[in-house]
Structures are given as C-alpha cells and as structure tokens.
Image (cartoon, rainbow, N blue to C red; front, side):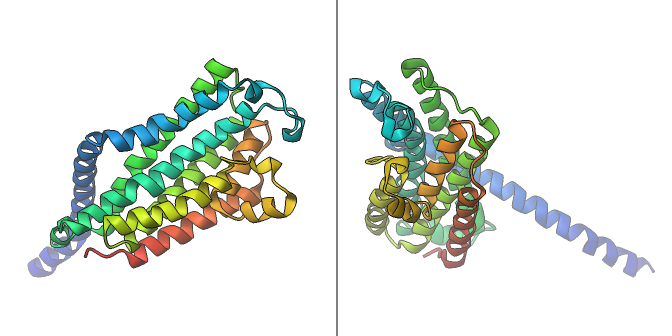
Length: 268
C-alpha cells in the first residue's frame, strides 16, 4: 500500500513539475531576449520610428491632405495611416526578427541551447512576442501622430480594428518565424527577407492604396496577408466591421505559416 501510494503521488506531481519547469524556462528566455532586444537600436528605429516618420513625410505633402474622389472622398494621408501600421508589422516580422534567430544559428547559440530544456517554441515565442510588442507600439504611435498632426480620425470600429491588427501581427510574425526556420545563415535570411519585403509592401498599399487598385489586382492582393489586412483595417477605420473573408485570410495565413515554422525549425 505504501509503495503504491508513493508511486501514485510521484506520477501525479511529475506533469505539474514539468509544466512549471517549461514555464520557468520560457520566462527566462523571454527576459534574456528582451535585454538583448533593447540593445539593438537599428531594429528599434526601423520598427518603432520609421513607419511614423514616413507618415509624417507623406502627410507634409499638400496634395496628400486633399480629399481624393478615387479613394471615396478621404485624403491620401488618411489612407496611409493603416499602411504605416502594416509597415511596422512587415519590418518587425520580415526584416528584424529573422537575422536575430539565424545569427544565433550561425554562432552556435542554438546548438548549445538544444542541449538545455529550451524548446524551439520558447525561443520563437519570445522573439515573436518582443517584435510583435514593438510593432504594436509603432502602430499606436502612427495612429496618435496621424490624429494629432494631420487630423486623421481614429478608427470608428475600434474592436474590429484591434482584431484585424492582432491577426495581421500574427501573420507577419509567423512569416518571419518561417523565414527564420528555413534560413541557415543571416545572409540567406536577409536575402529571403528582402525578396519577401517588397511584394508585401506592395500588397500593403505602400505604392498604391489597395482601394485604388483595379478589381482583378485587388482580388489577388486580398488573398495575401497584408492585402487582406489593409482592407480589414480600412473597413474598420471607416466604421464597418472588417469582412470575415479578410479576417479569415489573416487567420489562415497565421496558422499555416506558424505550423510550417514549427515543422521546419532546426537548431543547426
């Protein structure tokens, strides 16, 4: 009876201990990565400051502050606030995060980490959380500057805007995680990131707002994560709930890209 009781107690407490250990390890990784992230001024500039700076430059052009019938009567600066928000997400997911993870792989940090209780999900979650927080901070900064400097209305459908923004952040960071998983070196990560960067910027509406694109092109762009995000954010900014088709595209991309990143991630 005594032996059975002792064995039963051990079996009952082991899963709890394992869960606590994983949680402690994940928090330790997050704290370490946060300290390192604060020491990267270039990443902080491109993610936090550059999108808002670009918005200020564009908003300073007089023609961008005049109503445009092709955009449904809104101004170009109004249309570019969601674009600035998406630029921050693209910068964080595709440009800033992959070189960090692949740099760890090149220097053998990941190989040494593989001998510890740290799992790939802990490292990728920490990186996605930190870069996601920076991107969301940049999004709030763009909204605030657009409102105070150029009288851009705040999103009229705030819950829908927040949901679309979170889904867009998830898909951007999942894309960055996939680039990180597939790239063996920082050079490859930078090359792949650059190859993905410009098409995603186009889909986000940097050079041509999505609502101004021809119908055929717009339908293709809306099937991409940032094209769907641009439309969802525009709809929420105008006061409408984002189309479920756009939200579904974002959710699908997030799930598929996250699963692929977890599947193909390698320590070496």
